[in-house]
Length: 384
Ligand code: SF4
Image (cartoon, rainbow, N blue to C red; front, side, top):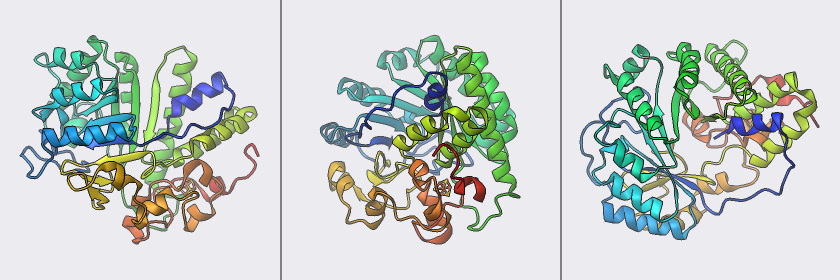
């Protein structure tokens, strides 16, 4: 996850480089339930509005939570399916808050209503992310439910009215990129705190011509717009957060943006980005699915590291006898292809390994989702 606004603030008000803080344990994205009232086109969990057998019971969830706390996991992102369909979501959330976790809820927004907003507000979630795939018709088509955009936006408004920190989660695809500018405008109109742009974790082909690829061009235009919007809003004193996910090359692309506009600050931003260090799957990000299987992140659902019903998360996470986990935790990672020779590995860390594995069968092959040109990954004159 690339926290764009954090680095944009560094442009406006640089802060000294301090020693890096190593998180004691990963952020855990926890799919508590696979049931969902929507069936979105790009859903990585292929959810449906049915009960899925074998899911963790609430007492099992509490046992795992105790282990996560003892392991010093700082953040729980409660997700689904639709987490608000979990019959014990509020009890689970309250317990997590009482234990001192940073607790976020990742929702489709349609189940936030006047019936439950007081209970949601009483939990005092640190953050609620609501997915929007575009404006109105685009969103409804993606979500395959007419009226779901209005319902989701109503959920956002209810949260805002209660003073809950809320954000839009937008997954960029070729079919909804045209709505991205309108969503950024909606963020401003509704005074929404955060915008999370997720890149579609698509497979793609291994050897793409990056100059001619239409999807890469769309991605670059979207990033340019996000950078410009973030800069203008922060400069105007509007305290908004902009974050991207599933493409750590965004940080390298941002460095090139800085070079063009603020050449004097390239070295400072580069040092800050290197301190962040790029992709953190299997290191600072973890996923537990609805059945209790542990994965290096949410896009590795086909790859189980172990199950919390049989073995504590803390043990599974530290076990590097698994070859994927050993490689993900290796510094530097054993990257190959253009990722292996890229000059910005220290910023990107080889991006999203699941895309490489899906297209080549090799975890360490180059990421086919990298939209940077050869010149951009070979450039050495940025601030060095
Ligand atoms: S080539 Fe690989 S390591 Fe370099 S920016 Fe692209 S995805 Fe990241």
